[in-house]
Length: 404
Image 1 (cartoon, helix red, strand yellow):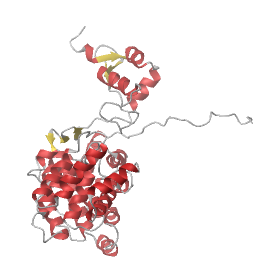
Image 2 (image 1 turned 60 degrees about the horizontal axis):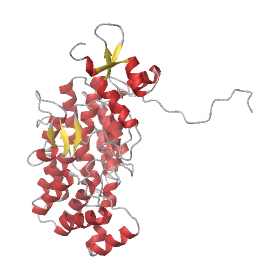
Image 3 (image 1 turned 90 degrees about the horizontal axis):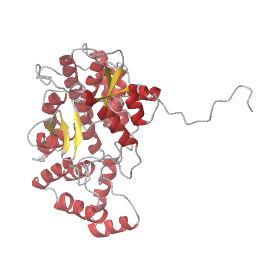
Image 4 (image 1 turned 180 degrees about the vertical axis):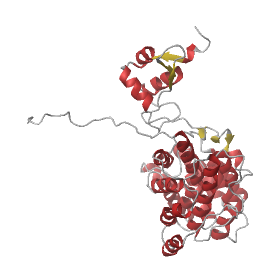
């Protein structure tokens, strides 16, 4: 046996391990569930043993899949070097985002996630161009929802950016920075500039609050990426067709509008508003008695609380936000339900403390997550493979033309 043979299985061994046919094995490989590579000594392929056994465990009937209770094990699994989720918080290319948020900016998180070191995407002279059509649309949509306005302007931005279709990794990073500056400015109804993004948001949304810029900075870094969620997977699918980065971000924004993805922040804000003029205990007792869930609490991975949420709530406490919301509400709900705080609740408290307009929590989320979308789109474009999952047909069996 050669030194690393134990890492691999043959097609026959892999099929036997999973109790499937060779054809199904090849289908799993095409869906990205199992890694395969040519055998060094023959024309056959060999298969990663850890993928085979991991898939076998996920397929086994269990009350609670390992650590990912709300994740569907039948969905595609994709290799990515960008981020992963741990109990200590998301890891951005080896760096814990909670630690990163202590001092760094969204721009720095972007260069980390985009894996760029030889150019400065956020150099002062790398600002987006605004065509007359883009200005016209931005002005006409001033009162529209920020995400809708951004989608409309970004749809025209490709034509105004000569570098939009660059294939060079550094070039894509430069385009990504222009997208970020355009996206944030459009959502804020301001002109694009080289001003740090958290300062730009602070000036537009909370100019009188001395702690607002730093709170926005922290939130943006904490939200920049979160593995392969619904909007990020949408972005990767779009990128796999060869779309440019502007259109990929549009795809992410559209997916984020769905209430099952981006709607949790608004529901958490509604909970905060309910508790503003009410005592905590009666509200919690009534909801628990009625079997109602608490928006902004519970998470499929963070069983003991979302580290991003706790970091942001701690920063809000230091900035003078009411302890009722930063400490007491999370503690009482955890005691009553066993569910711990997540980032949606922390964003709702941020919006309440800074007296932001309704819907600002979703807008801030979109601004930050666009960095991750650009990272994933760039990685997918670099791979150059079309994402084409197979459907498992569960309809009626085929009938002949003469069947009754």
